[in-house]
Structures are given as C-alpha cells and as structure tokens.
Length: 253
Image (tube, rainbow, N blue to C red):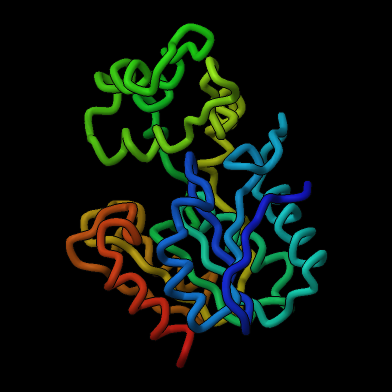
C-alpha cells in the first residue's frame, strides 16, 4: 500500500510512525525541530490519516507498507521512530529489514501482548453516527461520557474532517480498527534485533513496566530504556522538551 507521507528537512532519514487513532499531523511540531538535523519523514499508517483504508491488519502488513515507502524513496541508514502501535510496527520492521536501519526508537510500547483497554473509546466512537450529526460539538458531546479525559477526547477529535459542506467523516477506519483490536494488541514475534535501540517510556504510563525490561533486553540486546518524568503514554505530547532532547541525544551520539 502506498502510504501518505510528508518530508521535512535534509540529511539522514528519520522516519516517524504514529500510534493507534493517530496520524502524522500529531507529530508536526516535533518534526520541525528534528528537521533541523535530519530529513524527517512523517507517515500515515494504513487505516489512519490520509493513507488508504484496508480490511486487513497485521504488523507484517504495516511493516511491508513501510518497506514499500522506503524502497520508493530509496532510503538507507534510517533512524526509525514509532510510538505505541507505531512502535510495534517499527520493531517488526527492524526484525524483517534490519539492513536498512541504523537506529531504532520505540516510544512507550513493549514487545508483549496487551489486554483490551480501549473499550470505552471504541464504545464512544461506535455511538457517533456521522450520517446524523452536523457539528464537531455534537460529536464531542457524544464522546464525553465515554472519553472524559479532555486530552484524549481532543486527540480523537483531530481525526474529524468535513467530507463536504454538510458531512463529517473520520480519517481513521473505526470498524476495522475495532474488529482487529486483538491483532493490534498482540505481541510481536521473538526474533532478536541487534540494532542500537532506545526505548522511551513515560513515568506515569504502564505500557513498559520494570518487569518488562528483561524481555526487551533479550530481544533488543543493544538497547537502553529511559523514563521521562511526569509523562504518561503520550510522552511526546506531555513532556515535549524532554522527549526531543532524549531523541536527539540518542541519535547524535
């Protein structure tokens, strides 16, 4: 699948993969800063953003989508950064095509399977009938009981756009993402990756627990894990300066 992407800056390629329910626009601010040092490629994964929708989902497919883009752009010596679901795509890509990567950055995501934990978000999204609602405020009112945290709700709302003058639509394929949630939350294969890797976790997040670190080190033996204080799962949004500093310190060394 041909993925929608944006390119900022020049130099060594640094590719960024968003997480579940996200899209490349979420990373624009960070990309502008990182583009002072690298050629930053912001990517929409399938069923998200401006990329095409598909009834199929697997991390192998997402990795091959990425490989098609990398081949089309003729990129080598890549720094690959992925957050959450994008982190699993990045890890799987590193397992399948290590020869093209120089460094790997995984943001608040482990190698393990995760239990279902998006139930309320998916229930709220299922209650939004975009054939009926006529405004963004109506959508937000429907989501509010299911997604009470304002930041999470606004993050989801960024996927709304006007398909025409009277019709709102999602930039994410909600039915497929809901159906494939088990695959999204599944563990990646156990192949060893020898690429230099940085895991960045939020202090307030439970996605990478202390007891998970030995498994990360087994699969990624040349890896470090750093913890960003006072940040949750959306580390890059909640502690942007500390996040960018950590990325640049790792990339430039």
